[in-house]
Image (cartoon, rainbow, N blue to C red; front, side, top):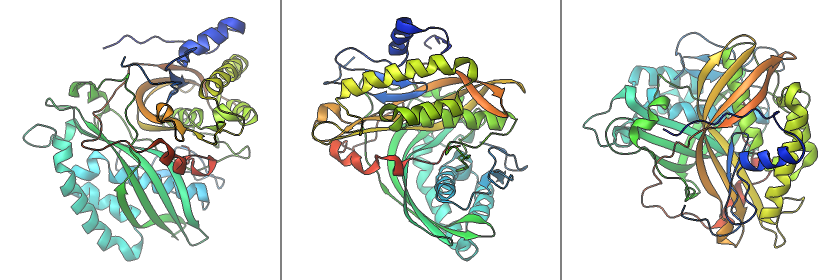
Length: 436
């Protein structure tokens, strides 16, 4: 296993900070580079790259809503969403993640309890049959090359890379998600495999919450794995087996600033803050909109590092824009669009106290340019990130984000990558997923 090089983002300033920032974010002066923007892995090549489960019983608070109740869990399912567009995005994402989890796919009783929580009253019976059928279909992908499924060794994680609201009113919503999944087993000799899906989720507002009315899944846009990342061996995924890590929980709860509302003063709140930070660093506005970036940092970074991390990220954003030939509107000279998205596949708590926490995330990030130039095409990269946080001003704030060794699944089987220009469909602020 590669050694982990920890780095506090407040450790350098001036030209030294710019050099350190370029090193941390992988920005090369020429040729190919992978930008790891404080937990975000974004492929930033300027030419052809070188070859080089949560408890199912007691509810637990994560992030508060405006009414103060917050998203909680019931039988392993996050519930209690805001009656908003972002609340609908969060519900669609969480229900999709739960439906693709190891416990849901391997434990019939847990699956039926989860469906009873998620489904609208008039669709519960159909939803159970649909879930059982999906679980049957998943057996092969979860077994790997072993003779039978080992539930404790299964790898079944889902990351939401984009969420587009197709329709919304006070009574219902329809949300289209672009997801990446990793399925397989940490046992045996076959590396877990990634896939991309397009999931359309129909929700209804019922019993003061978003409930699942229907969902359909089809093949999603396929982004190639960055050529500099080699697939890991199955045993490397053991840290993200069911008992070792948790799925991220998205809340859709925003504060007056438009950024995530304050988090609960507990370990779940620290996990949520870490997830949101990596997602926000992966938003294309991080690179293209200085005002948005500064407001985001003010909302997420601790006061002790805010000045230095702002200087570093300003420098990083400029380098990325220059390397990609992207202007302030997020497009290149020929109108091609910068695409960057980051999803958290799972979280692990490294340490926790009521004043400080360290959370490791397994992330999948897509980055590139949606246009005719295939040398700048969007690619996906998989990385582990350690996010250090402190309790400050009534919420969790980040103090350091440390890239660790990649954790890379096998690419999709027998699937060609989609053309670069197709990825414009998932770009733009309107397609940003809800945060935790």
